[in-house]
Image (tube, rainbow, N blue to C red):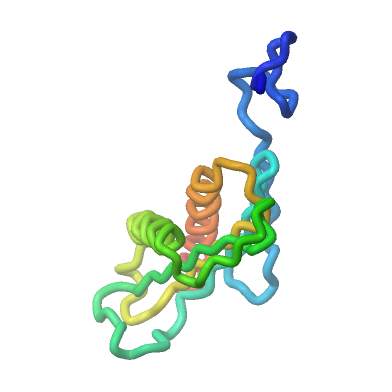
Length: 154
């Protein structure tokens, strides 16, 4: 299969060095403190942030900073394969961990002791490059949440 046409274009019409188009829609989840739908090419991810709020499980409370939790999942219909993956499969757990660590480094958790921030990311449509889009969406949602935290903590 040819990936570049005789005219020098990829199958989706892009030039070899051209990036996929990136689109974001903020406020996609009305009940969340920060949310967005991100699209990059044919990949679509919805992200939502809840918090900072009171820690739900007191045994997880951290006295000098906020607890950051992250959950990543792929919708069963996100790929052509209709394989049902169990919740917490290894790949999803690893991606959740990487995103949580990235968010912990970017959120000023020391300003919100004994609180909790929950980050949810779900791939609605997958067309390769999911992790790149997740990093972008997580960073933007994390940044948006920091703005919310900054103004609500004054």
